[in-house]
Image (cartoon, rainbow, N blue to C red):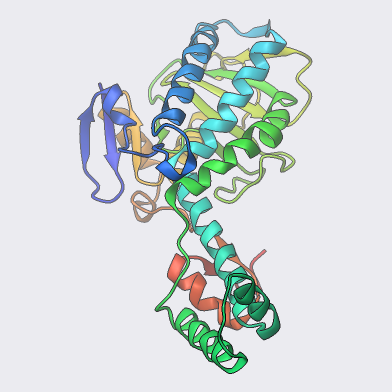
Length: 324
């Protein structure tokens, strides 16, 4: 059993491990994809069966030192972590909004270009006059910019980023320095519903790239065990450190505070812990205003003023000129 904090309500509930991460139909493929509805579920289950012994092996490393990690296992775990990041609800919500945003811009550009729109529509079989076609274009453009028509990506669209995870994120993680950090005393670690957290070099959270120099990729493996993938060459080893025993490395003290704040702040809704005391300790490390807050969603800078309505509809924020 776990204790779960709900950011929407502020309530804490006890839930089983099996139920804690269950979201209905989150990976269900629609029929038009040509694949079985549960194809992704089965793929993830097979991957987890392979990776589970590797994670158990890392969790069993309690003594500080350097340990050899087979390159094939390193590759497999890096791929699993990358895929775990992009398949989580928080990542997918942002990704789907951005897909809808770019689709909106593309459609707006088509509707706002008479000759391009005419070519597209006539190629589809339109038989009307040029005047009728232009009236149709203006009608569609008005409906689109007024918000009566809008683009909304299917929820499954974001799963296309699984290829990004394997092809681009996995190699970055393979080449990083891996450190297993042990926690020997209370308060222990919490984990959010975005289980792979990116922490920027100055403590930034949110829209941070895996390749950003100096960032930390944090994955709690258990309440007393954190895997940190940091900048620097790995030399084919995995390091185990135990800062609570007077020997530390990898994260500035207090490392557990950084990890818990990052897990809490980056979660979209739920935060999990082995007991309520751990949740309470993590919550007390945050300003009260932040305990139920979620990080800002995607943002953009400048662009065609007419596109602002599409951003507002999707919850995408326009950045001020002063923002970096």
